[in-house]
Length: 158
Image (cartoon, rainbow, N blue to C red):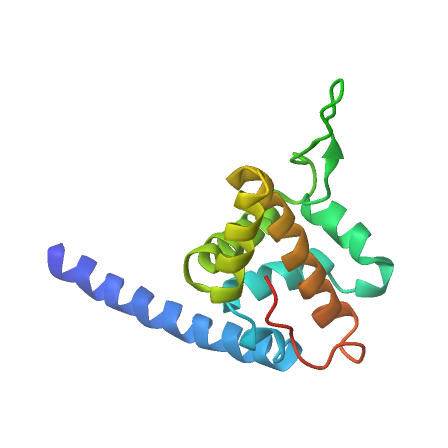
């Protein structure tokens, strides 16, 4: 039984590798410019392509895409304090993919590290900084996937 289980595991591992390779080829064909962006991997691009669906023209602006991904800010002000909070709506898997990109960039991308340092000095919390960063990443992805002629290369901003 153990030998049969090991054979099954090897077969499934080979099938996973084949499917990962096929997914990478499809993503490279659809969004080759986005593959060069820091922190954005094949899985993230695939998730965003799923969110866009067969008709990306239905999403008319980057604000609509941000709302679809659940990264548009919601005003949560009280008294003299003006704040925005996280939107809990939208596609949660797309939001999780944007979160992973934001965390990777916050840890390893020099421009993003500088942005985080600057915003921390301004008094922003890490949660607020991450929310702003996710919105920036959503804008970058939207411009790359829905407006490929408007932006030929992905920027290296925050």
